[in-house]
Structures are given as structure tokens and as C-alpha cells.
Image (cartoon, rainbow, N blue to C red; front, side, top):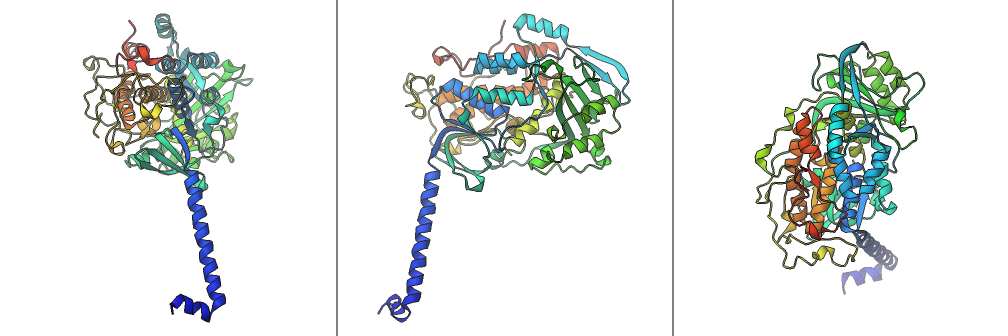
Amino acid sequence: MPLHVAAHLKHPAAFSTITSTNRRKRLTQAALTLRCTLSVRSEVDVAIVGGGPGGLAAAAAIVSALGDDVRVKVYESMKGYRLQGSGVGLNANAQRALEAINPELLARFKSHGTSVNSSKLFNLQGSFTGQSKSFKEDSAKLEDKYGIRLFVLGWHEIRQLLYEHLPSELVEFDKQLTHYDSDKDGVTLHFDRGQPAVHAKVLVGADGYFSKVRAQCLDDGPPQFANMVMWRARIGWQEGMPEPSVSMGYRDPGATGLSHPFAIIFQMGTLESTKDRSWTWILAAPMETVQKAGVDFNPDTRTVTAIQGDAASGSAFENAMRVFADFPQLLLDIVKSTDPTTVTQHGLYIRALGDAPETTAPTTSAMPDSSQSPSQSPDQASPQPTANSAAQTQQVSDEQESGQQQHQSSQPHSDPQQPPPELQGMGESSRYGSYLGQRQSSEQESEGVWGKGRVTLLGDAAHATIPNGQGLCLAMEDAVVLAWHLRRQGFTSQALRSYEQERLPRVKTIHVKGVDSATVEDKEKYLFKPTFKPLWQDQADQNDTPTCIVGFDH
């Protein structure tokens, strides 16, 4: 007699209980398997992790390039957007990128922006050093020639304008990525708290300094701490404050680079009617100054609290007041008038850019002929705290909060008049252009400088650097170039490698020759002259080169 039958005859009640328990376990396991299977069935073409300006710009660019039928989702870890950040300078290259996405979007940005025309430097006792600079003359010449003028807009406003430009359902909040799995058809994203997984043909990490996407994709460790801690915020003009028409910098006149504490206050544009009467302030101090003030800051901690401070308690505000207690009273009065919950605290981090993979593709970006401008190392620059450069420092940690090498050359498609398989069935409204890339035999093995397989990076997740006036501007460029290559080559690893290949020499060049301390001639050559092919136009007449940024305006 079989043992299980004998057991049943000897202890029928116990056997019935065991059988019932096993049946419940099997049913439970089957339900879990079905739930997991169903949860993965959420399919998108492009998943973007990080809902800061870089991630939102990428979504807007992809929709502009591929049409309304493209399935794009932005996954933001925060539960919703709130007022935060200071001001950002939108230089010529960022404006050209926005125009390539949608001219009406650029017009909205301009309508809310304001210009900083001059700056004055004060010492740590509050006395004017006699050092001042006017931006009017150089700006007027470039504006007359190119019709472009730098303007400053709040980081919150930049994010809000991009968010309002997108369909409301495109951004999903409270979605914290835990990890992803790659397969031959794309990437499956997994989120915390058991939220449904999502399968995407392409994954873009726009999640800032401590990018989770980068950590898994490249496994190259955290960015390098630059020994500086920064605080920033915004405040409306109040009675008794100076008029915010001239930016004011405070530092030891003999100090250079980022090795000494400094502060800067300047005007920024907002979405309000009083846009010309809003201040933004940025404070920065090296670690030794922070430690002397008794402020505990751990640069290796990657939590939102370490980056933002505890907004509810105002700890970032309190830390700023302790570190800068000896700065001039006029500055401190303005800082004291700030809502403590809007003050952001963060470390400053950088990443080495590395070298471009070997390739036979033509020279790209703003350098149509590499002999005209050899790249230089970004650490050759020694930026000074001007209004424009300081305006860029605010955006780096907000991108982090928003999300907590062999290149295969392109081969012609057999029928350039037909869309790639990844774009078929998207409808006539999708402007897919000609498909110039052929899928590699194993896309999962395709590696690049900022990605692998169907995964790539954008903005600070890819190329965080010292505050040089170009952080957010380069993220806008990234968005346009990425969308351009996705339209040309489909949702493939080749498209991502082509994007990275085009971006690396451009980013290296801008980190040196497009910063605020660069010459007017270099700024004109690298920021004003290069143009982007407009994503909103039909691509049929734009196949003369395989790059998005081409030529100079003569």
C-alpha cells in the first residue's frame, strides 16, 4: 500500500489538513505568478527615470520627433512637484535645443525669463571691491547677430513649463526604481513597494548624481565629491531689499576657483507677474569651512535628506546660517527672509568623461572639423562665481532628487523609405524618417561610454561636472540629440550608442570652451553658431548628415 494512502487511513483528518494547505499554497503561488505576469504587461517604447528638467525635456523631444503615438513614460520618485530650486541661466545652446523641440516652448520660456546685465563683487565685510562686470555690450553684439540673449529662469519654472508642455498622463509620480532586467527586446523596470513592473524598449537614466540606472548599468561607483557643499533658494523681493537688477557676489577678492566660501545673489524669472523682482541666492563652502561651523555633512550618503536636508524641519536653512554666520548682514538678512522649507543643501560632485569608443562615424556636434578645436580636459577650467555659472549649480541636486566599449557603425537599411520594425504601426502622425541602422546580432552586449544594450544616460547621470554655466543647458542638448537618433534608428542599442558617440566630444568641448570664463569668441563659436535640426519638422529632407548638431551659422 502506498505510504500516502496508509497515512490517510491512519490519520485522515491530518492528511486532509496537509492536502488543503498544499492546495492553498499552490493557488497562492499561481495567483502571484499571474499577478507578476500581468504587471509586466505594461509596455512602453521609452522609459525615462527621473522627472527633473532633463528627463522632461527628453520626453518632450521624443514626442516631438516621433509623434503623439510614441509611448513614453517618465517615472518620478517624488510624490509631486513642489516649489524648490533657484535660478538657471539658459544660454544660446539651451535655447537652440528648446527651439528644436518646439518653437512655442522656447517662446514660453522667454516670456518668463529675465536678464542679468551686470555684477558687482563685495568682500566678506560687505565692502565693494571695485570689481564689476557688465554683460550688456557683449550680449548686445551677439543678440544683434544671432537674435539670442541669455536669460535666467527659476529651476522650478523650467520644470513646470516642460511638465505643462507634456500630456498629463505621461509623468508618473511616486515611482522609485529598484532595479531593471534586460532582455533581447528591451528592459523591465521594477519599482519599490511591489508596484507593477514596466517593460520598455529603451531605458533612459536621467536620475542625477547618484543615478540608480548608472549604478546598475555601468557599475563604476559614485561620482567624485568636489569638496564643496552648496545651499540655494529663491525669495521674492521685499521692502528694504536692494533692487535685484545687479547680481551681487561675496567672497575674498584674492580667492580663486572653488576652494573658498562664496555667495551670490541675482535676479531670476518666475511664472508670476512680479518676475522681475525675484531673488535667487546660492551659497557655497569647502568641507573644512562646513566642519568648522559644526555642520555634519556626509558626502557619501545618497539619501534625499542628505541632498535636500530635512525640509520639514528646515535643517538645510539652519546649516546655511551656521556656515555663513560671519558673512555681510545684507546677505544674511535676505537669507533669513527665505522660507526654510524651500532651501536645498547638496554636495558638489563630478565625473570623468572618459574617451569616446572607436568609431568610423563622422566628426559630430559643434566640431565639423576636429582640427578646428581639439578637446580639452574639463579640469582645465577654473570658474569664478558669476551670476551665470552660479545659476547652473542649483540644478544638479534637483535632478538627483528627481530619481534617487566597442561601437558598431551604422549600416544602411534595406528599404530606407520604410520605418524600422520598432516604429511600425505607430500611425501616419509618427515622423520616423529613414531607418539608417540595422539591429545588432546581440543588442544586450552593445556597450558605450554612457550605457549598455538598450540603456543610456542623460544630464548629470552621464556627465556631472563643476558649476560652469552649462549643466542644464547640456541636458537640454542631450534630450534633442537622443530623440534625433531614436527617430533615425528606432528603439535600438545602435540609436543609443550613436547618441553617446555624438554627445561625448560635444560635452568635453563645452565643459571648457562654452563656460562662463571662456572667451567671447569661443562662446560664439560653440554656443551660438551650432544649430540643431528641428525635431518637429519632417525628417525626409534632413538626412544629409548622421548628426543632430551640424555646422555653423555664417
